[in-house]
Length: 274
Image (cartoon, rainbow, N blue to C red; front, side, top):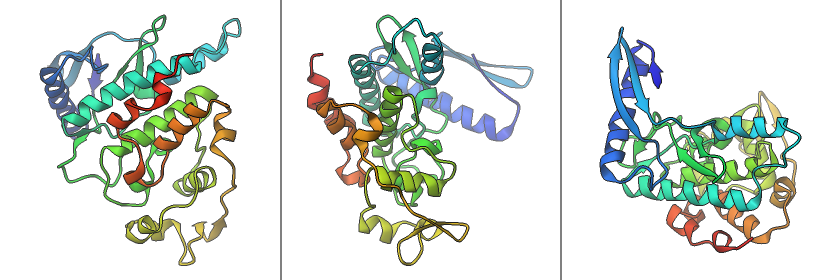
């Protein structure tokens, strides 16, 4: 059960989530599309309760527990990552077809359903919105936030794809790919690992001036931040070229060139037999 405290802001957000969960449920099979199944909701002592199917640990908790058990090998091998990816993409493909953006995809919002079969479910639609909504300038947890959101550009369903790329890199390596302690250090990591931000994004972003000087240099509290150049392969630590190409196409700074869920499902990496 998800319990929402008696607070107007929390209530409003949760009522929106209930509407979306009901809409998702009547629109398709939540099990087929690897999405959370809501059974019911009710009020009790001025609190709101959402009753959902019972699932296991989220991917962040599961990874930590797995690493603590030294008798077992690492769980998230490339074949298992392949299965997690396919399920996440099927979930995203479905909610995107409904005109929705998840807006907060991260390891904590993907739960294990069956460890042996590596079955997962995508949860938490509290931040989700329709593509036709007036979009919020603050969405996505920072480490999984897409460049277009950071820079204050208009955004769409491709922000979920960026988040998925971040998640896969993290599950393979055990560390956040764009390690950061602020938005500026996040941008520095993205530029250092992926490459420069396209000119049109720098020109149109409403928040560009908050992070970049007139000379195009990153700064924080009057200090110039110089991105440390490294490679995606160096960060992800794998020689699997198909996987690297897949991650690279998810972590493409320009959203127009980033894979959609439909396109990602056709990528050769997902057809590779290990």
